[in-house]
Amino acid sequence: MTVVVGFYTPTHYGIAADSGAFEDTGLKIQSAEAKCWKAGNALVGGSGSFRAIEVARKSGLADPYALRDRLAEANVGGEWAILVVHPKQIWEIDDSFSVIKVKQNYSAVGAGDAVAIGALAIAVEFVEPYRVLHHVMKVAGLHSQYVAPPFTTILKALGEQK
Image (cartoon, rainbow, N blue to C red):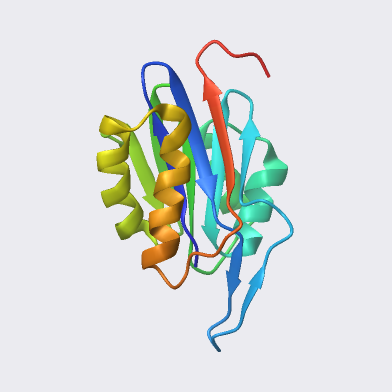
C-alpha cells in the first residue's frame, strides 16, 4: 500500500512516491529505498509488493511493455502496480500484467490513488510544475492512512540531460 503519482506538461514531467511499508497487522515502517526512480528517459515508480518494485527497479527498463514482460518472467506475485512516466505519455502496469496507456497527462497507483488523482486533476491545471508533486503528496498523505512521508520526488524539464 502506498501512492505513486506522475504527470507531464508541455515543459516538465515528474513522479513521486511515499516511503511507507504497511503490514496487514497495522504495522507501518519506512522503506529506506525510494519507490520511484529514473530509467532512461522515463520515471518509474511502484506500489504494493516490494518484490515487484525491486524487480522493476533492477531491470532498468523504461519501455512499459518490456518492463511488464520482465515482471512476468520474474513471476512476481501479490498486489502491485507500476507507473511509467515518459515526457509525453503515462502507462500503468498492474498485477494482472496488463499495460494501460493513460489518456490524461496524470495518473496515480496504490492505496492512496483516489485522493491523489483528484489532487492531480486540479494541480496539473493550476499549480506550477515544480510544485505539483509537493502539493499532491501532501494532500494524499493528509487524506489516506496508507501514505507516509517522507516523499521522494523527481521532476525533469523537457530537454534536460541526465
